[in-house]
Structures are given as C-alpha cells and as structure tokens.
Length: 356
Image (cartoon, rainbow, N blue to C red; front, top):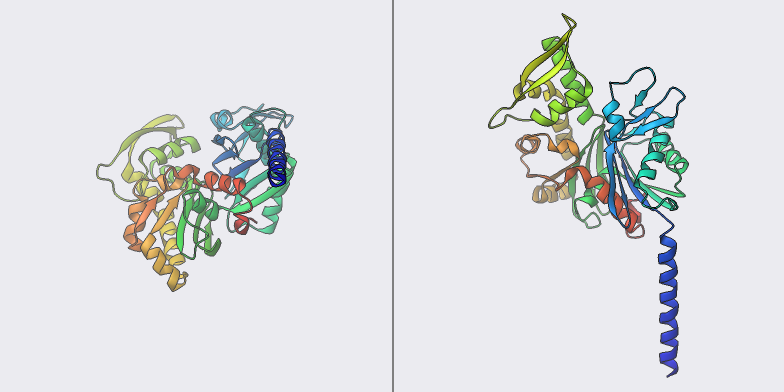
C-alpha cells in the first residue's frame, strides 16, 4: 500500500510538473530560422513551417520599415524617392546589419501565433565558411530581435538533417545545398563536417549572369526580377529534350525604349554555363579531398542536392555525368534547411554535437 501511495504521489507530481511546463510553453515561441539571401523561412516547435517569404525589406525616408517579405519584393526596382528597398543579406551573411535586424524582427512578429508569446530559444542556420565577425552579426541581430538564447547550425548539416540523412552514424554522405547566395558542399559523418566548401556562387549569381548576357549580346537591359523569372522558367544546366522559349521585357540600350524579345533555353544555358561549370568543378574538387573510406560511402549513397538552386532543370544530370555518381534531389528541397533547423530546435540535446 505504501509503495502504491508513493507511486501515485510521484505520478501526480510528474503530471503537475508536465502540466506546468505545458502551460509555460504557451508563453514562449521558440523558432528555427533559415535566414537566406533570397528567402527566409521560419519554423516553430508546435506548428512547423509558419513563414516563407523573400528576404527583402522596404523603408520610408525616415528609416522606418514599411513592408517586409513578399510585399517588399513586389516593390523591388519599382520604388520612388519616398521608398527604399533593401536585401540585407549577401552571399548568405548579413551585409546590412540594421536592415537585417528590422527584417528579422518583423518576420518573427509575423510568425508568432500569439501576440503575448516571447522567443526563448532561436536556432539559425549559417554558411559553413562564416567568419567569427559574421557569426557575431547574426547572433546580435537575433538577440536584438528578441531571442534570449541563440544557437547556430551550419547550413549543410541542417540540410542533411532536413532531408533525413543519418548524420550521427559513421557513414559518409555528400550534400550540396544551393541557395540564393552560397553553394554549400559538404561531406558529413559522425555529427560533423569532414570536408566543406562554401562557394559564394549560387542562384543570385546565375540571375546576374542572365542580366549581363542579354545586355552584352542583345543590348537589352532587364531587371533582377525578370532575370529571376527567366532562370526559373526556362533555365537549364544541360540540354533539354524539348527546348523552351519565352518573351522577356526590358529596355533597348540603343534606342532607349521598352522592348520585348523572344528567347530560348539555349540562350539562358549559354548565359549561366560558366557559373554552372564552376559549381560542378567545386563538387569534383570536394570529392578529391574526401578520405577514401568516406568516398566509398558516397559511391554507395550518391550525392544529395538541396536548396532552391537544385531545381535548375537538368542540374542533377549534369553533375551525375561529370562525377559518375548517382545524384538525388531532396524532396521539397527549398524547405530542407529550415526542416533540419527545426529538428535541431525540437531536440537540442540530441543534436548538441552539430550546434555552434
């Protein structure tokens, strides 16, 4: 009888403790952030991915933010003197500290389900080649945006966790995360990065290549958003079974008037070929630096592609032909990093080896 009474008492205490913890959790809004050059995604413990919008913020002449995310993106390259749009991140790191802080604060506010909740823990992914100064800028922005505890996880590890790779096991896996500002190439084993290469060459560079190509070859000046649309719609890394075409709009640099031009995927492939070649060569270089035992594992498992850049048509085929390895594109590659960052947030103790 005494034993049952003690057990009942312990269970009651346990229930009371869990209930108390559950009630306290209602006042906290712990979040995971994929703070990307092109897009920012936010996930919470209880609700998964709750925010996914472009990393853009608009300011009025007084320096106060008037719009963030998708609405600010729509204003990009269309503003007058009373508005200024800023993309605070460049090459995966913060280039404009004040704008990044305002943007982060606004995005966290949008992601909150309850106005009274506060951010206790925040996990942010960062490029593998980030410097100490850049780490401090990320941490300071997160703390000023309201986070009490800030943790960072390297982007390739977050992507690997997000696509379901067994990062804790003694097996080698190669992941290539192609974002807006950086391409992260990493060989992962035993909760760590054995070899990593961070290229400041990714989706934004391809977009810039398209702008320069049509300016150089057609005397046509197109905007960033038009070039982005071209890349997503007809861009490819290798020849397509049926080449695509689309009409593009810009300004004729000779006559100075608006102009429409019909272009094909062959033109776009020519525009981005050099950057694509550099990416493929970097992957080959990383394979050369991989220890032989892990290289054997990669031979078995292949290369995993994540990030929005992996959606470039036939990029997987181009890499497979050059490396002679199987290449897989992650399911929903654009959310792989935030899903992995969210998994780290959900179980910080289990993933403590991967946290910076």
